[in-house]
Length: 264
Image 1 (cartoon, rainbow, N blue to C red):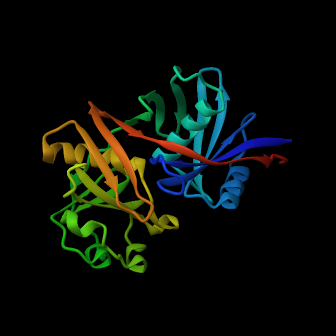
Image 2: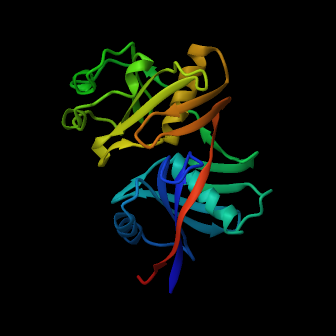
């Protein structure tokens, strides 16, 4: 017995750009140990497991042996696979039940738009080692429920070379580094570092934009923004505020379709 397994590059329309994810369509519930093993085998930044239900789809995300609480690119990739594979019509919304509550995705003019919770940040003192690990002078440090957010000069974001050994000691899921964009096509730029979870840098991080959206909306006085995550692979995220929710829009492209041996 096999299960469909698809590799998708998310938050990009180009192959081998954006953030890669594996999407496995299940035939019923699977135990955590099995999903962790599959995620370790794919080696992807996220492996999404989609379980069809009467009122949508169960969705869980794993990065190697760690289950993720919220994953934007894994959700976007999952919705892309459901539409591309004909499990949903182009007009149907993809509705997911997750650890972070109900999430949904719709297709909008060639983009996939995710409905995610907004994550507000509060000003915070720099934890020991953070500034030294980044090697840049912060204009602002805050913390959301998931991550630290650090604002620096936008010209410096792409050139950062963090000390990941030091950064691994900071008690947080990840560190978002961001600055205002000097490219008129984008409102802000960012990078996301998460060495404590086993990934030094994530290519394009949807969940980070749940915090970045409200953060830059306050500074720029606008509710719709276009962001660029300036990692080596790079990706674009459109962010729209909607009360205590954010809409994250991105594109996706399929890299590989295969089958996973599904024996327990």
